[in-house]
Length: 471
Ligand SMILES: Nc1ncnc2c1ncn2[C@@H]1O[C@H](COP(=O)(O)OP(=O)(O)O)[C@@H](O)[C@H]1O
Ligand SMILES: [Mg+2]
Image (cartoon, rainbow, N blue to C red; front, side, top):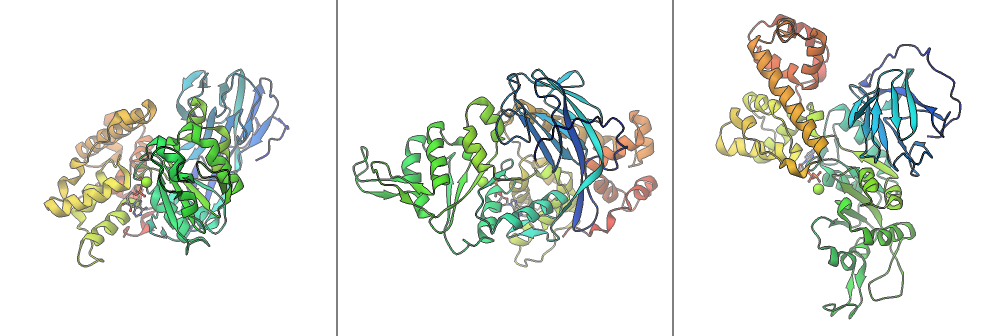
């Protein structure tokens, strides 16, 4: 994405057709397009139109809109098109991001919104013509299953990059399937016949990490009796998967960067550089851009890893995948792999919060089979320890789960009649309907009212019902 300096005002832009991302057919989807213009500050009048799902702003190389304002952080903020609109997220910048005058962690930027970063003011203009992008028709990539739009988009890109030699960075919360995706990319690459070597940077003691990665000569340090080949060399001809790369000690990062860039390693205690033919895939549960801002991750290594970035959304943002995944895990446990989970279990699973993502879903299915209590499964979910999350993540989860619980109770009280519930909650009917859709509660509502009337919910949800039963 190249910054154009044409700052022609787009104040007369037509009303936007697509507010966020939207599936238009089984193979294509639309992404809202928008422009970000510097209206005040040293970089005025730079302007840039979005050319994908994200548009990043900051002073570091690799940002889409690269600013020179010294009060702006290296990775300051990002605009991301979601199903709900253009979301603006601050990336733990030093001086913060304001949207419409309010300092925010995240918020939705409407047409004409003014955003302040450092001493710079940006204006967001939504553009009329959306981008169109292909999505995979498959509901799996290797062993990774998914039928939701974001997963099929991911499969499309993964399928394109797998055969290349490109370094891939996979981001996603714990349990979203990052390790599985890394292995699937290896499996779909020309290196599939070679080794797939996993390095868990979070599990390895920092003082051993260099020797593990690059090896050592006999006598290189106390305890190094024999020469040892590092994991880089062990992955020769195949793929090296650096899991939880965000935990890699700062002092090792330049060595890793050199190994990736020059395709060579030097064993500890040796002066010889050895060529290694390795492709690197890295994964992390962190947003490394925030780590770069904190000084915990080197900008140049991030830039090198970020050649292809694949983000796996948390399960709660792709609830359409729950049925398929539940059926898969159920089949794994039953003598008959095509065994179908009972509706009662599926309904209970559809209601779950899935903070622990796919991993947690799998164990909930197992637990239900062991205890035989299918309906209670939703209440038994383990909580992740919130103190392991950032304040922002923890708060988002808490509000998300509160919203869901509220909606469930509200709708139950009003027998899933949306108009009646909206009146009682004093909210706009279409807003309520949007919330129900976002929390995938329309499906729960349909299940609840299977034999009842709840006429207005049924009318509303007939669109999109042709998606199949999710198995
Ligand atoms: N899309 C998926 N399809 C099938 N199984 C999945 C999927 N995502 C995750 N899993 C399963 O969930 C568990 C967690 O996945 P994993 O790849 O280890 O997650 P992460 O590396 O992100 O923590 C694994 O058992 C994996 O097999
Ligand atoms: Mg993992």
